[in-house]
Length: 312
Image (cartoon, rainbow, N blue to C red; front, side):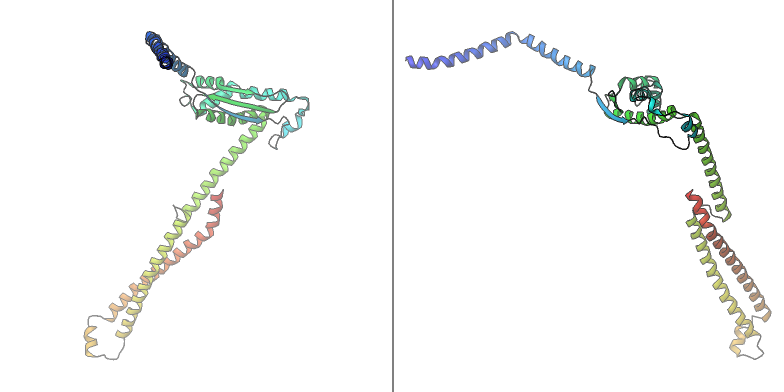
């Protein structure tokens, strides 16, 4: 009996511990429920107050020895070398350009305040500057540019537009104003040449009577040529038939009674009049065919000019 009691004691002890735990839980159940609700509310508030952010990053290599082309010859000759400038001062100048309000405003205008989740372009520019981080290590010529945004699609979009605008702004700052005036004049000159080319192309097309494309005009002329040739063949056959009839009526030799009966209603004068009319029709068709051939020749001569104008 003593052994049996000793074996039952551990089971009784374990059941007592479980009952104590359940008793404590049910006794403090409202506190446990309240703490659980407070934890869920705190997690939800943290998620809404501190949403997850996405970052897009780029690295820029700044060449502090400026390379200039032939559009800026004055600046090439008068500007001193960059040996007196340190790398840090050049990098700092580029950082100031990247973090300038003008650049942020240009990016905001290009993307749009609505897509950036702002009420105005000024607010959008402010949000761009707040999410922008620009830094560089001391003595390094590499600038690290990063942009942070809650929207995963918006972060790379803003950074890409910022870098595109930065390169233009960089040229505006470092190049002379005369160079940009020269480029503007060249652009206007090219635009004027383009307008002249388009006017010349339209004039050539109107000259040869083609409004659509060159291939469409050639097809139309080919169809018209085939139709005129067909009519000309029919008219020449009629002329030959009428000529044979006139020759037959003009013969002095008497024909059979059947032949005289079938031709009794056709006098030589009537046949000659019909022959003259058909010959006139043939001549008109030949004239029309020559006109079409002339237009085809003009089209062949003008084709290289039109293609050259279209390539411009």
